[in-house]
Amino acid sequence: MREPNNDVIHAVSSLRATRWFSDAAVRDDEIHALLEATRWTGSARNRQPWRFIVIRSPAVRNELSLLGSYAAHLAGAPVVVALAVNEDGGGEDAQFDAGRAAQNLMLAASALGLGSCPASFFPSNNADRARQLCHMTATWRVRTAISLGHPAPRPGGTSAIPTGRLPLSQLVTEIEGP
Image 1 (cartoon, rainbow, N blue to C red):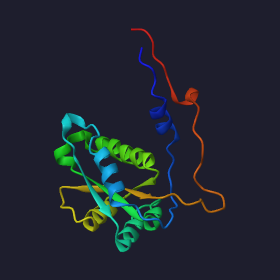
Image 2: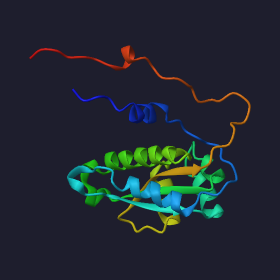
Image 3: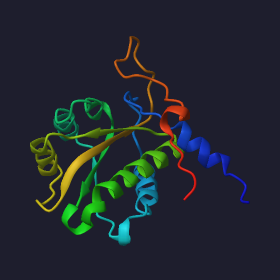
């Protein structure tokens, strides 16, 4: 039996959303490294139905932050990476593959000491506007963007977002036998 890689287990189980960022710049080599790691995400039939749009423009980040119910953190991040997905060319697995790429991007960011948080653009007219802001053609959908930056202390107050995780006993069903 293979020994567990506790570094990987720790990286996955300790990843947390970061919604507040310092003014420290995210270097080009950091962006390159995390995008290089992200492009290796597996995809169904190796279609790689994604493109990554790196957004440093405060005006575009601000406009994107208005397109989702929980997207305000995009405005305060020094960098946003939008994820464009070709649903036609990527098949029915395209959005699942995009989710895998987003998670890998956030794990790579964490490994570099950067914080990250995903945002979703719904309803579809918001996703269409995000696509336009990212200069993508109509064959691409932009439903997700990820804020990136050096974490800043969380402001005081109570969050409306619950913390913690449900225990496995509430999440897992086992089926045994034939």
